[in-house]
Structure formats: structure tokens, C-alpha cells
Image (cartoon, rainbow, N blue to C red; front, side, top):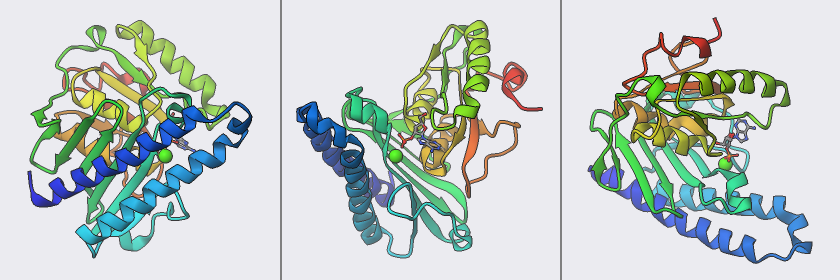
Length: 264
Ligand code: 2AM
Ligand code: CA
């Protein structure tokens, strides 16, 4: 592991401590106080992102930052050259509120506009996924690879785009198709985790309509380094400068096996 990757991994682990602290606190809130849930979560999302920027800017002072919180979510032209960190301080916010233990810190690093490093850390399970361009993908020190099983022998992980009610029907039409064509579906609630589970062979396919760049920037590098493929809903290469619908496939699932998911 390069020194840069090692430092980013250390930062993700420390961010995880803040997430765990937040999750303890949210569980101890009384029902009455839970009306302030939204604010509490925003406070932790924001706190973790501030921590990440503080640490990462010391590690790579020339890097730009894009992140889900605190008004830095718009991609600027200058992010296409040099280094840009793409951060989701807490991916799986609803899981965080509801105690589902499937929330991660996601740190992507783009170099000249393309994924270069990805680190995704779940502090609840202590699962640290990471990868660097051309160097393979790892989970807690073990090299990971996508599954080689065909779709009918694999799980499909779906997202439901809960923030866009106009997409609900389409999500479930595709979800129904996924139930028929694979073993079953799973819905985890953290897109970064979903992609990492695909990377480590736990599923054959993933799709979610309209994700933020910070939801997939880090995990897409991990997935491709594990032998998977990632694309938009038209089957075109993903762009790393905007939100996008995302389809991801393991080694064992060909595009033709997944043709039903694409908007043609
Ligand atoms: P979050 O937990 O960081 O909010 C769940 O369906 C997935 O969609 C999660 O990864 C979630 O990230 C992400 N998500 C949440 N709000 C979104 C939005 N407005 N647009 C796109 N993706 C979103
Ligand atoms: Ca988030």
C-alpha cells in the first residue's frame, strides 16, 4: 500500500470513530428529542466532513474538495485537473438514524478527473475497503474480486431512489425483473457499501437510479480494481463530474445478461 493510500485509510478509520460516537448518541435520545433527528444527523454529517477535510488537506495540500455537505457539492471546472477528493462523510444516513449498522465514510480521490483512490469504511463492522488505480482492491488487507457466477446464481443489489418519488415505479419494475433473473434482491441503503459488496463477490449486479457523485466515486474505483464494470443506465461510461444513475456488474455477469436494466 502506498503511503498516500495508507494515510487516507487512517483518516477514514478515525472518521468512523466520530460516526460510532454519533450512533451511540442517537440511540440514547428520548422519543421526544427524536423530533430533532434531522438536525442531529446533519450535525454529524457536517462534523465528519469537516474532520475529513481538515485531515486530508494536510495529507494532500494541493487537492480540491467536493462533498455532500456544507455547500461544496457542486463540481467545478478546475476539479478536472490535479487531485480532487470526493467525500461522503456518512453514506447510509437513514441506516445511521435507524440503527442498521450499514453506514460508511466514503473517500474518493480523482486524479485529472478520473478515479485514482477509493476508501470506504464501515465502523460498525470494521470493514475497510480500499483500492488504488492499477493496484487491486482490498477488504481489511485481503485482495478482493468480483464474483464469476452468472446472474441466475447471484444476488442483485438494488437502490430505490427514495428521494425521487417519480422514479419509484421504475425502480420496482427493474427490481421485479431482478428477482426473476437472479437469486433474489438485497437493499442495503448505502450505495457505497452496495458497490463494495459487489466488489468482494457478495452479489452479481447493482443498480440505483440517480446517485450523487460522492455516493459512487470511491467505491467505483474499488469495484473496477476488483474486476467489475460500472456504467450509467444507458450502458455508457460513468462521468465523474455529476450525479448519475449507476449500473454495476461482476465479472460473471455480462452486459447482455443485464440488457433489461438499460434505458435504450
Ligand atoms: P446518503 O445516505 O449519503 O444520503 C440510498 O438509496 C442511497 O442514495 C444512499 O447511498 C444515499 O446516500 C443516497 N442518496 C441520498 N440522498 C440522495 C439524493 N438526493 N440523490 C441521490 N442519492 C441520494
Ligand atoms: Ca451522506
